[in-house]
Figure (cartoon, rainbow, N blue to C red):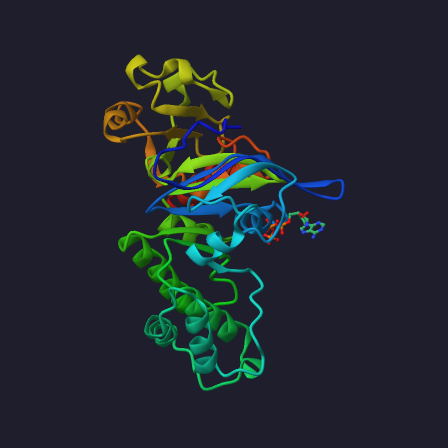
Length: 341
Ligand SMILES: Nc1ncnc2c1ncn2[C@@H]1O[C@H](COP(=O)(O)OP(=O)(O)OP(=O)(O)O)[C@@H](O)[C@H]1O
C-alpha cells in the first residue's frame, strides 16, 4: 500500500490519509490513501461491496470517518462538509428525486438551490440525453431518472464532480453520451472522480485508476502505462527450436539483456496438436522488442493490448496478472491454427 505522501502534489484536489471507516465491527474501508489531481479523470474500480461508495460518502461528509483524514477541494469534509458540498457536484449511486415533480421543474429547482447552478446547462444535458422533461419523476423509467439526475449534476460548474456509477441503467448510446460529458468536463479544466463496473468506460476516459478490494486500496494504475502493455501470443511449430525439452516454462533468462525490463513474461506451453504456444507480455514501447520477437520464428502472431481486464482479474480474483487469460489466449491461438489447417 502507498504511504500518504507517495504521490500528493500541490494540485491534488482530493487527498485521503489512512482513511478508515468501520460500520460496527466491520471495516468497510481500511487505511485508504489516494490523491486525485486537478484536471484529471480518476476512476474507482472494485467488485460489489469493495468500499467505493463508502469512500465517496466520506469525501462528501455524509459519513463520519473512524480514523484518518481527507481534504477535498481544500476542506476537511469532517469539519466543513457544507464548504465541500458547494464545490462538488455529486451523483449518488441511488439518486432519489422528488417523485411529484416534472423533469423541467426539478431542474429549475436544483439550479436555484445550488450556488453555482446553471439551468441552461442542465437543460442542454437533458436534451443531449434525449430526456422528456415534461414527465413527472414518478412516471419515469429507471434510466430516465438516471438521465435526470445527470442533468442535475452536470449543471453547476463546480471544480470537482464525483459520480457514483453514472452510466448505470443506461443504454449503450446514452452511456457513450455520458462519457463525452465526462471528457468535456476535463477539457474545461474540471476534475472528475467516478466509479464504474464497466471496464471499457474506465479505459476510454480515465487518466488514473484505483482498485479497491474488501476495503483495501489494492492497486493504483496510470492508464498511459496500461496502454503501453501488450500481450503477444503465437505458435512455435518446431519444438526443436528450443531443443525439444521445454515444458510450459518461463524462458525469461533467454531474453536479450537490454530487453529484460520490457518483457514481463516469456513462456512456452507444452506441445499441443499444432505445436507450442508462446506468450510474451511486454511493457513500454513495443518497437525495441519487435526485432527480437521477429527472430523467434513464430507463426500466427497476435498482439493485443493487455487491458484493464487482466489487471482487474488479478486484483479481484487474486490471480497472478500474468496467468490471467493465459489459457484462453493459448486456446485462441490453437483455434486459429486449427481453422487454417
Ligand atoms: N450502513 C452500513 N452498515 C453496515 N455495513 C455497510 C453499510 N454501508 C455499507 N456497508 C458495507 O460496507 C461494504 C462496502 O460497501 P460500499 O457500498 O461502500 O461498496 P461498493 O464498493 O460501493 O459496492 P457496490 O459496487 O456494490 O456499489 C459492504 O460490505 C457493505 O455491505
